[in-house]
Length: 328
Image (cartoon, rainbow, N blue to C red; front, side, top):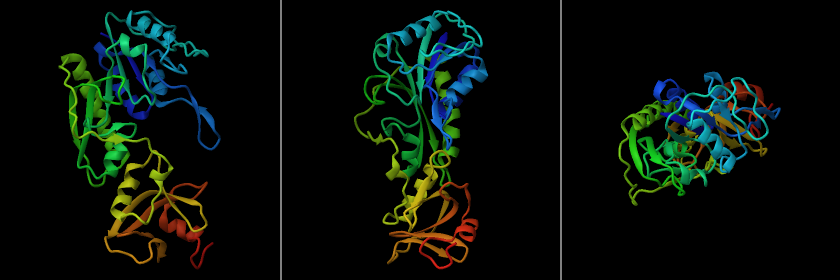
């Protein structure tokens, strides 16, 4: 059975690699987002799914939007077994690059694409969606991060049918995964990627029935913004420790210094749960501490503005702390 894969992120790239190594379901075409500027130099970089498709030798396209008739025609062609030219370059309209696989009948699957799928695709294909949560909990853009932030003890992956609603379609398979006390986004996503790939292959092979999601227990994983990254000492330290783990290593938490600059925080640990009369950042010998309401968070690995990640001890030795004696 021929498959078209639609995705963007590193999570989606891992699922694509799993699918590509199954002979029966190797995608004939991959659709992903256009290259975009990234890093300090704002150089154009390919999304992880484009890099994965290129390495796997699978035809891929990066159209400005997938919701137009041109893209629908590309999908029909891929599922019908039409071949692209191996090694051809992407044009402005997002023409496919690479080698295409043979197809007889086909399916379309979406995983962590980062944009809404609309008509005409929704009406023409029964699209499978790979979603990293136990639906209906954590529908939306950031389910892994929100699960860690909320202190959930488990999460998982759901294979569902894509509908016009936000992750509200019927589900055919789920798999659960515990959230460990030391899990970061990186460690948990790695396990969920493997689970997602296995469930997707099972969904193709076994064709389990779809069941509508229950009305109870619906929560939404809103897109992460600047406020989600800020370690506000007016919040409990136990919550902020979860924020640090939820945003590492891909986004990063941060704390505001006395001079209004932001210090990135990559790793932190809870010290105590005591209330503090004066919440805020302080240095204690060689340690960098954030007193919260309640609790204290020790910042272990930090990143100064424009600098590289480093242990907090090295940061204090080289920079000091704004507002404290001995500031460099």
